[in-house]
Length: 346
Image (cartoon, rainbow, N blue to C red):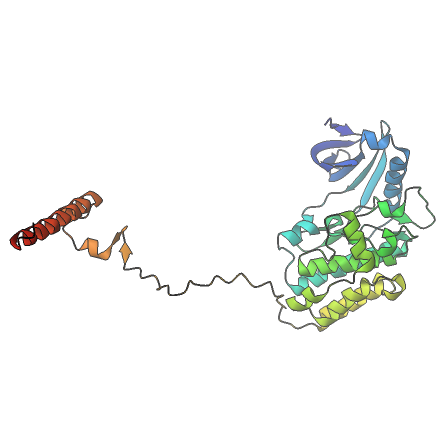
């Protein structure tokens, strides 16, 4: 892959990853600050709709300023390839934090959920629907500060693109109306948020399936299984909130993440002072075989049984013992032969 060394005033330092666009760590040579530079690949730039969507993301995100949303500093075009200059974030994705068990106790996890809710509610106030709320698009730093990222498939009110809605987004977090390709409202993000909080608490995705067809079938027709949350000790009011956020019908969900954020704030405030430790699945029980005596550390020591240590040093080797055993066998047979001879049997 051929990477640029410079884009405008931005000096490329390191390639961070890519897909339809490549992301680099770069330095603003004028202001002297480190930034993240996102550049549409040549192949994607050749596709008019991909280019339009990328520029739409830049314009929408640059108008959004919130403490829990990644900041956009600049955007433009270099040799026909659009780019976006963003705040460079230290830390990791929420996906990595969940997998690594670094989301803290119940109270800390609810604080993460609260920040996500506030961020998504804010973009809704700007008439923007994210449409891809998932752990990969949430960044968290060492202090627990959350940043909502990636407006690549977000849709502003009044903007129409030709691609069908159900092809955009991550299947596991899609709302039923998104799967069906219907016109979306902020309620689609409320649904995805509910699934994200489920995973934040349980450590596993709420929706299961290896194939897109099975995932969509689950989203459209199967009720969300909340029993794992109850089994882990998640408070009932939180389980209930997740259940309401993930209702199949948009009208049955909480009307916006603003009210959800208020409920989470109340739960955090009124929660017990001692941290709630969520239960984990019990480890497998290894049963001891029947009629097995407990191990006595005195039986074997230094690689030999205790009775062998009582022998003279010259008899403690395996060869000496084999010779001794052979001699004993010879003596026994000799005695038997002698006895039988005396009895005139032989």
